[in-house]
Length: 253
Image (cartoon, rainbow, N blue to C red; front, side, top):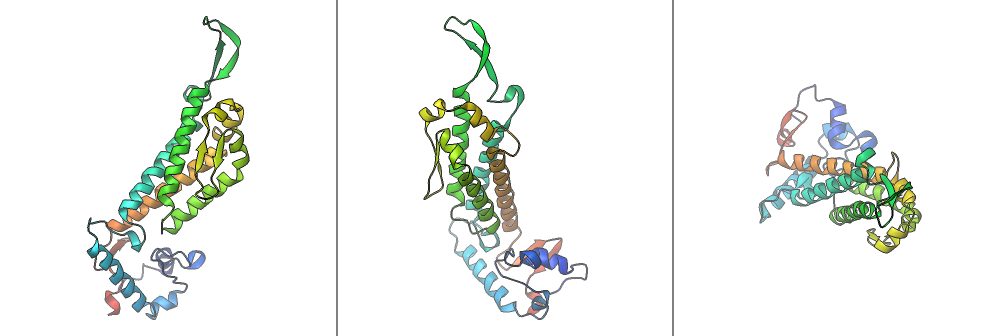
């Protein structure tokens, strides 16, 4: 490859997924050893990959590029949008102080008289949790067919966390589908539930809502990263990574 000595083996690892990430190279090819690159044994595979990628781009009727031969920028944008919305929904539930949907207010009677007891605004909490559930389901829909390993892994982690908390979720009126992993919120059951349990699930560091927010932020980041990759490729296989520009296989021809 026509690169200078500063482009060392660790940088090869970052690009091709060697070492601990040998099976998750960004090109979808397992480059497990630097020697294999040096002796050119993957020359044919790379050429075939880029030829296929260019063919897909040329055949596109709407001009949509394919990011690293994986997901289209259109699908990645949908994934990014839904992940961002889920993270924001979870952040709303995590807010503290006066901004918290779990802030309590004094109990009043029909005449407006206040008592020395406090209650949650159940309607406000329900609205926030419904927003979370809707955003969660939207992200599941948009990531179900992803070909980007990092996105799939982060989403699977989120689904596992939901499964681990399905008992508590059921106690507040949220059921988890065993087939498509989506959430269903029952308004009546939710409003009858203990709001302290809802708060424990969504309103503290390390809570279920906090962990989902973290996974959604990861998916958002990975999707944006793939979109950026798409803008750095040309149909001829040219790239621009780590400040090294050129073609992956020009020097091997």
